Amino acid sequence: MHLSKNSYKNSLVTICLLFVITVCILTYTGFTDPNQPAITDVPQEYPAAFSSDDLSFISQPYQNLLAVYKELEFMSKSEEIIARYSTKHDLSADASILDTDGTTMMTASIARGLAGDSRDDGKTAASVEQISSHMYVNANQLNVRSGVGTDFDKLTTLKRGDKVGLFRIEGEWARIQTESGIIGYTVARYLVGSEAEVEPEKPIAYWYINANALNVRSGPGTNYDKIETLKRGDKVGYFDTDGEWVRVQTPSGKKGYMLMKYLVDSESEVDRSSSLPVAQSNTVTSLAQQIVEFSKTLQGVKYVYGGYSTNGMDCSGFVKYVYAHFGINVPRSSASYANFGKRVSRENLRPSDILLFDTDGGNWDVSHVGIYLGGDKFIHASTTKGKVIIMSLSQYPAPLYGVRRVID
Image: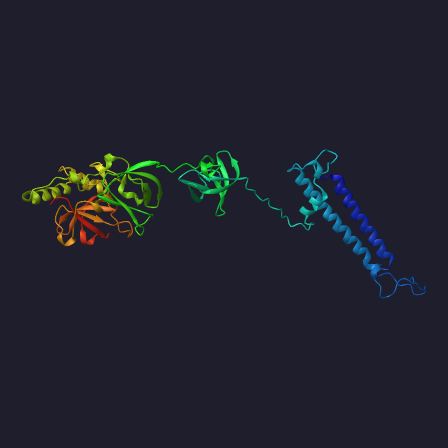
């Protein structure tokens, strides 16, 4: 209801009228001007109903006036709220009343609640979702997210054959509840209506072994049992990833886990160690020295991740570039050097040996390589310096993982 100027005028007139009545009552009951001379020669008689101890007749007008004030204040507050509320909300006809100008109004109980005169705390009963059916996951891995879309947080990941409760379908997404009680959204097309409809697991890609020997284990870690050992160039089917491990299917059909860093996408990327030339003993010193001298000519070439030319190179690209200059094929990735060439001790270092470092925080694997020059010096493509430089081996901060010799 919208307040009109007349309603405010009526309220003001009512208050003034009550005030006048109150003054008249007070005057009648004896509260007169104290400066007026007292009349002593006319005896006064008081009604028998009034006793000297009963003064309620004096306070009663005040109490009545206070009650009127409170009621008017509440009415004003309620009407103001109703007026504001009716401009923002379209209430249904069965829960509202209509003013003469057709403005939709709220009921008095709603007005009291908004005015602070209701016992209702404002709490509403939450509706309980009901699972309409059960579905099964028909994908190797299926993410459950907090909302409809891949930009929402991932709550958990389901695997093939997992059973979920379906609430409803929203476009391409399904609102589901996992068996562990997690409620979220997943892509609906990867759900089927029965366990019999779940398709057998198939690899989603095929990769190749880029190491001399690579173990397949029953779980994602070296503490799991070894199932099989594959050799360089073997083809494996890829299912999914678990950290630095991947779940694969071997050529013999066995399923297990192996380290992802020793796998490459195509057979052409496999580094064949058997292609290394066998140098004659009387030319070893000369070839090693040539490798050292040529590597020095590359000082200052800028560091570029994935680079393999004088326009820019990373650490493994640098080592491969140097050895390729002499027709020697070595691995392209740092990690592949862990099982490459002949293992030698630090005490038996000689120029042209390849140094293997662990630079990624103590995981104890090969993450950086360089070429030993002799005299405690080595050359490498440095990420921190941004170019190929020569450094002291004893002062290099990263642990030396090992040494590999390519020419014997």
